[in-house]
Image 1 (tube, rainbow, N blue to C red):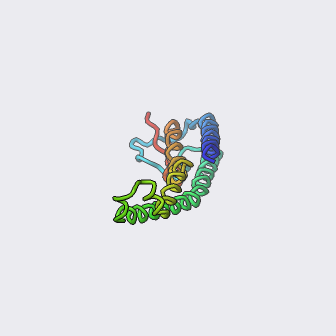
Image 2: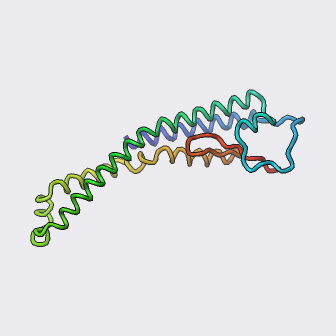
Image 3: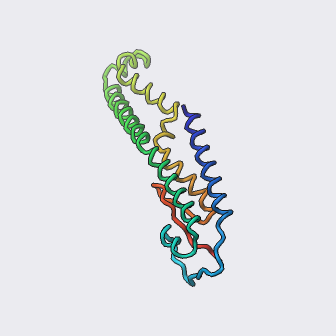
Amino acid sequence: MKRNIEIHCSDELKAIQKRLEDIRKRFQPSENTCQLSTPPKRETLRARESRNMSAEQTEDLKAFERRLTEVIDKLQPTARLWRMVLIVISVCTAVGAWTWLWDSQTKQISLTQSLMNHPFFTISCFFLILLFLCGIHKRVVAPSIIGSRCRQVLTDFNMSCDETGKLILKPRHI
């Protein structure tokens, strides 16, 4: 399952990179556009649209933005579910560890016997380790991983995105 997530993420990133390359090839600013002497630090997509982008280029960027927000929004519910699972198992392990450590017999018997006397702690600890081995730590932060990887790719195109996938167009340095 871990491999499927990595393949899905890498496929999405490849599709995003290909789409951005297509946009970069087609983006040619027209000669009659006016350049501001002091452009703002960051512009919204609508502000850039009104200045020097053709309708086709704007539609491409809007389609890319919609797809990126769709991908991140799709990952949010599953990430939230995995966060809840991790919280529940962590709390169970902490409560089990508390009862295990405060048991007076723990100091007097062997470790294996002590773990057998506290099955709640043993089982919850086993499931916590199993979840980490299955990659729950990556599933919990999957939307932010996609966002950060997209930001890395978008820097080549003088763009960025926020945590929801909305594009941020940065001014070109001339």
